[in-house]
Length: 476
Image 1: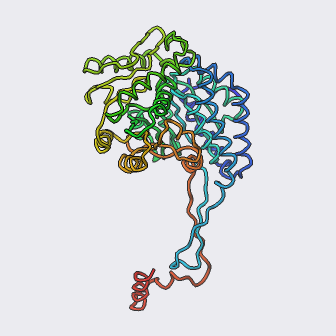
Image 2: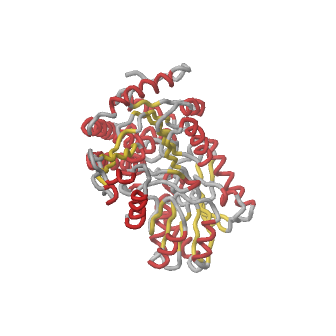
Image 3: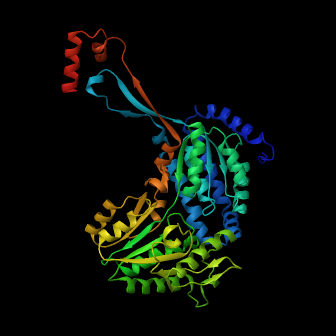
């Protein structure tokens, strides 16, 4: 199979037409061929583990072990989970029939949406292309994947993967820049799965509206971590530093800022410093020498994150930990900022880098009000040993998802639907939720032939019919 060329203006419409024709055949497939595609994908990932590691390292020096944990393991977990449950998910789901419709039967059966577009981001360029692909294949769809041009090595690897294990009429990877993405968005896809920023998500949603395409938007935002006075500070520090430091903070669900009870701010910051040194500077040579710490993906994003740090300091924030940057390596040290004012860019924009502003609160209501003054976050992290405080924060802060005494890992749970709320996203992914996102839930009612209860309400609307309607409204 040959790579798809995008040099011709007709290439993408022709590719879409071929997948559209193929999707009609896939619609009639049972579980077996879908499972075969998933198993083939799992084998390819296992066989190409080293190549995946090398591609991520080439694009932004991501450590091999971190690639295993954040790109390969969750992809394989999702495949295994889907294979285990697919037949159950595909089976028609019977629903109860109300008494007023006695004699009828109702069920929901699941059918593929058709041809789907997956636009993957640069920060987890392998996993966030593969994960929605797994759901699309499980639901019986054809798919075109558009990887990010910011991670060209991974994009080329994904193209090779598609050529080696899929028919291009079923799955194709189309490389290119934003002009290619714009051209793809002009096509009448049945479903679009986009992972990226809220700003670009709005562009995708506007394009989808032209064809009334359904969308899943996995976006981002400022996800808070809240540490109350009852929290185990060492445990909280370990999990916050790991969640913020992984991928050098370039994670949509990374803790974006920290709200800590004023009584424990000092001890928590001390623990955070210890954890940073233990995880990334055990030899005392500086975080820059660590083989366990990634780099910022490109010069543009380096300048953006470095600019957030500079702006915060100009507005009066102080550096409590870190602060070192090296433009030659696109390196930014894990950095804790104190007293960043609400109007500073670091408190207004999603950071997407290893900067952690820290603010204090006195009451849970104060912390809740601060979080709720911003658009709804993709994730909420609560560190507490108080069940009452846990309930209060989970009940009063809307968010796409949440974790208690943990960061990041709710995304890895295949039975937990993952997605945002409002500005942080639309729709759900992973596991059964991902299967449903790429499926049309067709409602079916089968009525018996002959006398049915509803025929009692047919015209003409005589007094007798009206009495029957009155009984219906009163009792049914």
